Image (cartoon, helix red, strand yellow):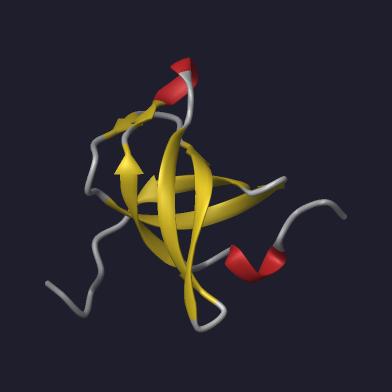
Length: 74
């Protein structure tokens, strides 16, 4: 397996917005007691600063994300 399973289900904030099928952005993910940067892919474009949930790892520090509203912050 080439993916990073530990990051799936973690949340993060986009440092660089995603562009949907046009290309990835960059996300800072809270994982393993700290934060790590990953290339972030999403089906729809997402803006800088959006909170996202990691739904899949592509390996090589790349993840698939969806927009996420943290229920603890609502």
